Length: 361
Image (cartoon, rainbow, N blue to C red; front, side, top):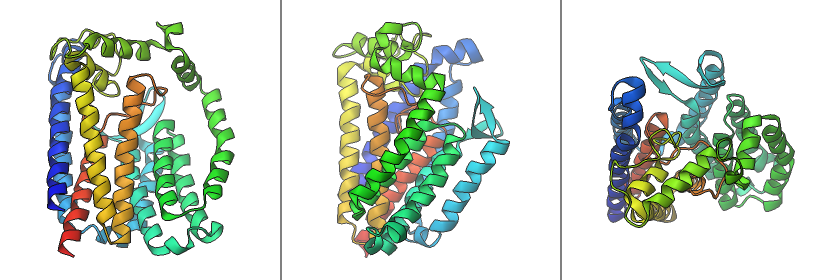
């Protein structure tokens, strides 16, 4: 699988390099006017990228099978971090999602994504024959997932909660869980989802804006309208790198959640499609690693990693083009860094690790 590892590494580096360029392009004007330095976000992004590269190398070098041995402690540590952030985390706009260390922030829910995947992969690899048993195979994972979701919702962060739940459901479906078991959980969760949206004004406005963003162009639909204007303005080849108009205080979160819109404006349809093609190739090659893995733990671990990267990319792209409501999920490897970028690099390291170990087996 050496050729697969090379292709995944090359695709990841291309996406990361594009991210560095576009983060600077999308944030430089805002950073200069608001923070006094056009490279403020670029420097921080590079710091997280270097940390991510170091973490990726470590994830590549240590045999991934050791993670199965420590799956439960890793999961419990992630739960503890989610509890601790509610007590000692930094509050931003009413949300407690981050720890602050020496001017840099860390979001424990990002680490929980990979921790939950490792825990589920270990459970399924050991008890796959019991997965169709509601109490012995299905409920233990649902209880663990429920604890994670409740703590992340408390922050509050509905987007990450939905993403983690979707990934775990994909892993369980592939493992052979009964569809009616998963449907039952989904049906019982639906009233809670409706309540969480209805009781929170900004979430309700996001849904309303998604249905018709042009109805409230200066209010709830502002982001989606500006995103679509950016994508439409780029045409086939774009207005030119660094020449975006929408990043000039028109499009909020231009270097994070809506960086694809700036890519579309500056690099045109060609740039946007290129990003989509790169993610498609990355997901395909990751799926090939999972398919060829003979170790059950490695198979489910690779499946979960591919699923989380794929879903996050699809959701971010869908939000940018107006196909999904605004979720607040960054585009993997491309959006402005932070703990999300570090964890994404760890995921790539684990994928490469699985492939390497299988070659040696």
